[in-house]
Image (cartoon, rainbow, N blue to C red):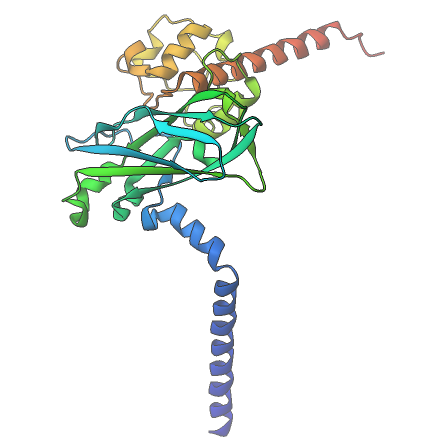
Length: 308
């Protein structure tokens, strides 16, 4: 009996000790855990970041309004280019904001954001935004910045959100005190040259979930896309629409494809769009760069002297 009681006491101490360690860990990491929780669940109006829309469009329409502000120590003007837009649930939408550095030196800002009502944060999904990095803006420079988003159709199934017909997306730009992961807002200039380095980053964020460069994944490989006709990559089960499209992959056609695959080849299986023109430009530039590298490597190998 005494031995059994001691064993129970030991188990109790171990359990209580485990709970204490867990509580101390949660306290130590409460801030990062809270941020991760917000990012994962949309709690407290934090929006979601995704790589593509849900592919389903609901009949329900909501109005999305835009609100902006700037911290007093950041010499920027910042405003939406549209007060609001109406969107169907599941419909991908591209909107724009303008920022001007009114100061005399380059400054780095960082945007925070949320949506109201707060319960909608779980359903507000952003595909592309200027708010995920510290942003550099030159003095006197004005840029137009895109936000690509959709509202998840699952909102329609939430009984607590039945009354929501207006959503407000709010941004505030602050001065970045310790800039990290700095991006240059000039990347959104429509006259900027194609940037294959940014294209590689966008490919990793937007395309790599479905596509690899040199093998079939969910989609066909894209490393050799410019060296083949549409619908001809070995080993990939194309839709009849794309297989019989007689489409050559040129820079212009690939741009049109990324902008709206169904408009270019109706009935194909591609559900994803890249609405922002500069993003398409840089992704295509990256794929062109891959082709050039492959050709250079092949030419170098062909010109190498035979081994003796």
